[in-house]
Image (cartoon, rainbow, N blue to C red; front, side, top):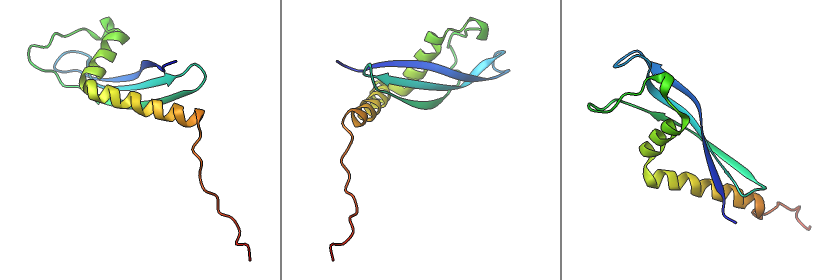
Length: 107
């Protein structure tokens, strides 16, 4: 079974310009699970307005839209890297790495 991933927006910071309540920072979390084990990573995305961008009033924003901004900012490779990291964390829970132990000297 493959892992599933969930993105959530934890908070957003706004500025009064160039539009009222213009989002400039998004704090977010991506969570991965294999159905039994769960791992998560947090991130922060800074936004700037590009001329010609369509503005959505703060009250009309949806979590899906904001997560889209985060994923667009990260790019395909960035999103894939977060998923790979979560997969590795989950794999370490399923198959804990074997680490050497320090033993007392036999003499």
